[in-house]
Image (cartoon, rainbow, N blue to C red):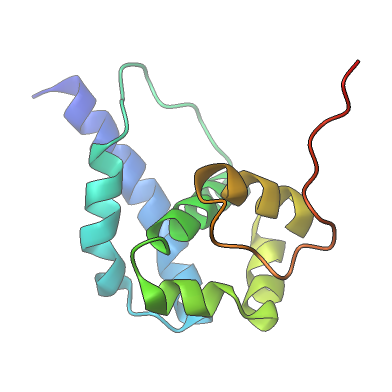
Length: 126
C-alpha cells in the first residue's frame, strides 16, 4: 500500500469526524461534503507522518476546510455567513473567531466572515 495514500485516508477520516458534527450544526448533509472534501484532500501532499492533533485542533482544521469548500458550494457559503452558526462552531475549535477568520481568509479572501470581531489588517512593519 502507498504510504501517502494511507496518510491521506487517515487525514480524511480524522477531518470527517469533525465535519460530521459540524454538518449537524450548519444544517448540511455530511454526504454532500464528501465529493468536495475528496477533491480538496487530493490537492494536499502527505509526504510525512501526520502530526497528532487534539480533537479541537482537528475541528479547527475541519472548519478551515469547510470554509474552503464554501468557495464552490453556495449552500455551505450561505450557512457559514450566519452568526449563529459561527457562534455554535467556534467553541469546538481551539482558536477564537478572529483567529479563525484570519485562517479562513488565507484560503479564501473573497468569502468574508461577518462574525469576525475585528477587520483583518496587515502586520505592522518592524
